[in-house]
View 1 (cartoon, rainbow, N blue to C red):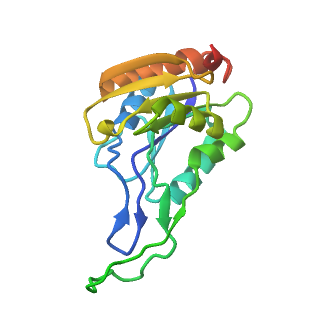
View 2 (cartoon, one colour):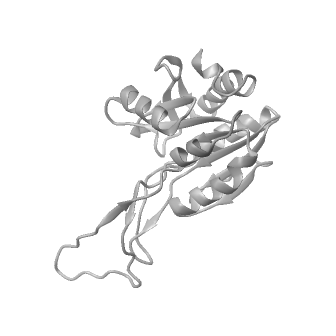
Length: 218
């Protein structure tokens, strides 16, 4: 049995007390992967941004809001885990300044300066210990395999799962799984519940049942 960290859902970066930057990540794929891992007898910790669904019974759920909060939770949990499945879609940018009160219309435009948020997976990749494995998701709108492979290398992952924007807030999805050599080792489509089970089966076969990274290279 392995202890697995799964990140899931979106994060929010507030502009003022009531408005925020975010995305349409639903958390469904994170839930599907958690269910598959629990059914396979593993221990699962989910670090989740704001979602409207309930995660499977038997999982430990740590709820966060911002990307910084998600990173801090992962830094606490990951050292005691065998691996990471990074399904979350955290905001890449946040406002440099957050207004203390609700921003009101003035009849003029509004310029908002943004700064990058921490890269959660890349940070964990730099800290991973021998024997730990990492799988990331990449949602791309252009050159999906090329951009996914850049992410895999930069974030020091073993496998990466590629999907597109149509997956957000959808019940179904289509994904490809790439290894470190850029090979498509699997492709699945269907309900997120079924795709999540198929993706986890590959992770279990290639990473959990063999030393980290060894299965990813073929």
